[in-house]
Every structure is written in structure tokens, then in C-alpha cells.
Amino acid sequence: MNAATGAVRSERLASGARLATESMPGVRSVAIGFWVGTGSRDEPDRLAGASHFLEHLLFKGTPARPAAVIAEALDEVGGDCNAFTTKEYTAFYVRLLSEHLRLGLDILGDIMDDPSLAEHDVDAERTVILDEILMHADEPSDLAAEMAMSALFPGHPLGRDTLGTPESVGATTASEIRGFFEEHYRPGNVVVAVAGDCRHEEVAAALEARFAARPGGGAPIRVPVADDVAPLVVVRRQTEQAHLVIGMRSASRFDEARWPLAVLNVVLGGGLSSRLFQKVREQRGLAYSIWSERNGFYDTGCTTVSVGTAPEYVDEVLEIVTGEIEELAANGITARELDVAKGNLRSETLLSCEDSGARMSRLGTSVLLYDRAWTIDEALARIDAVELDAVHDVARSLAAAPRTLAAVGPFDADAFDGTALRLAGRAA
Image 1: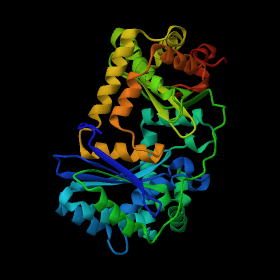
Image 2: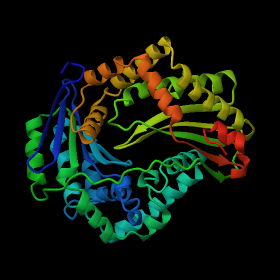
Image 3: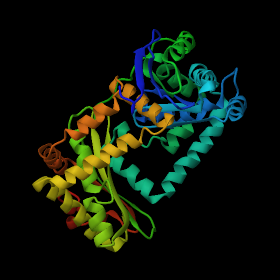
Image 4: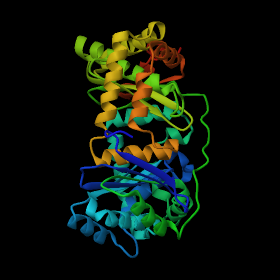
């Protein structure tokens, strides 16, 4: 391990939990994260949103350490805490001075071991989450993104919003939340990542004592994704802009194609020099912003192009986007585009490791999702090894993949006639 990446150590503890630490010489802070290998795709329909519910509830405290006590303890040492939920995992973390490492481990250990999950807290957070669902529904770009996922993975938990639905959140009981916690929040399904001024042995000893009371657990069994997609989904809203998301199935997080796909994404719409940003924004002025992004899941993935444009420009924007996807499939990218994309990804990778919180996050996701701590040098080597032919191959695969169009704006589905659907990649 070189000086840029620090000293990384990882092991599976006797309790079944996995621990990864990275010592960062010269810093005086430490970031601690508990990563649970369960997310929204692992919830039954009737408990949709349970993982996000727990994200809200765990920091409500424990019988021995109420929420106000946690808040005061962290404020006293200048620390901060937060949590987030994704499709396939949930994370809880704190960042504070390294002299307070044990406090951080105690707080996270307490909420992961014996959260209160009191009925009155469940009822209070239910109202907050229902408001959060409404807030996202009020934002057209968020709604279009959620609709695109639903269209790409119809009838599958991956297509659901991580927040759940108003119906599921409204009906979930405190006892059901407790049951979901007991099933999934066990050491065998947890990765603890610590980065900063820390000693691996000290962290391991503290965790072994903490996890001893609730051993066991493991990764959830996941329902595979079917091949079908919904080609078009439209929601009428009296907005000034049309919000469009074109989605395509693409590589999973384990697929070797993810590396050339990362390069292709930068070229397509991942940066200021990308083809879509240049043609749609800079040359024609059809949108304030347009971008592409990729997501890799356990057994599948997707690449999306998102844009907000005036309703009268929808067909023109769709034509440009689809034309670029087809052009990349036909001719690949240039040598110069390959160099620019590699430089972009290299810098993004290195810049993501500038502080203890970022390194903790990288460690946690790496060990949780890949069961190993990827080093920075390994990632950079994989990026550098991408060749033009490999990018051309994934471009052809992307163009041939099932494709969807999600749209929010002042129109109905019948506004997307045969021409628009053809441009979106589907015959009417």
C-alpha cells in the first residue's frame, strides 16, 4: 500500500461482522461507518421503505442512550452523524476527533445492537417520511428519475423508490420494523469501516465485545430481475419544462464491462466535454443541464440520460440523445475521448479520498459489495487498462439493451407518437 492510500487492514471477526480500517498518518479525525447489506430491494412489498424507516429510527436512541443524550454527546466533542439508504445497503456513520473514537464506536454499537424502535417514534417518523415522499413527488426531475427506475425494472423491488410508498409506510407497524431489524441487522450482514487516526486492533477488540451478544446473520437472498422493461411512462404536470430520463439496462457491479462502461459514460454525458453536454447545451442551447450516469447492482445495472428541456424541444433532444447512442455503437469513441475520460475517472477516484469520511465510505462499500478492500492503485490500474475496442463493445451492448423513456411535463402519453418512441429506442 502506498502513501496515497494509507495502511488498509480487513478481517472477519468471530461474530461474523467484517471490519476494514485505514490508518491515515497526519490526520486527527476518524470516520466510523456501519454498513448493512440490506436495502430497499430486499424488502417485501408490504414492508416497502422499511430500510429507510430504520435509517430514520436508529438515531432515535436506545433504552440506555436516548436520542437527546446521543445528540448532546456528539455536540460536546464536535462530532456529526448521519445515515442513508440505497437499493442494496444502508449506512450509518459518525465523524469526530480520533481522541473520541471509543465514543463513536459506542454510539453506533448501541443503536445497531439495541435501538428503542418505540411506537411513538415510529409514528412520528412515519409522518416525516410521508412528507418526504410528497416532497420528492413535487420535484419533477426526481419523479422522472423514480419513474425511469420503475420502468427499467417493472414489478421488481429495484424499481421501487427507497422511501417506499404512502400505502406501505402508512401501514407498517413498530413490531414489523422490529422484526425486519432483527432479521437483517446482525453481524453477518454488517461491515464496519473506520478511516483516519485509528488502530485496527483497538477497533477490533471494541467490536468483538459489542457484537458478542447478537451473533449470526448473513446477506439477504435476492430475487433476480426479469428481462422485460416498460418502454414509456408519462406523468402530466403543468411544468414549464419537460423532464426526460432515457434508461437502458447495463453492466452489474461484478461485470468486467463496468470499467469500459465507466469510460463510455464520461464520453456520453458524464462531463463538460461530453458529447451530450456539448451538443444539447453548448451548441444548441436546448437545456440548462443534461447528464448521464450509471448504476451497478448485484445482478444487473442501468445507464440513464437525464435532461430538462422546453416541451417544444422534446423530439429534438430525443433525436440527439438517441443519435449519439447509435453513433457510439457504430463507431466507438476516439483516442482523444479515451484519454480525457481516463483522466477524468482517475482524478475523480483520487479526489474521493481527500478526507477520512470519504475513505471510510470507500472502504465500507468495497468490503460490503465486493468482500474485499479495493486499493486505489488497483482501481486506477483497471481504468488505465481500458482500451478502445472494449468501449466500443459496451457501446454496442448499450444501444441494443432494453430501453425506456420516462417523462414528466405538460403532456399525456399520446403526445409521444411513433416518432418519439422510435427515437427513444422502441417501435410504436
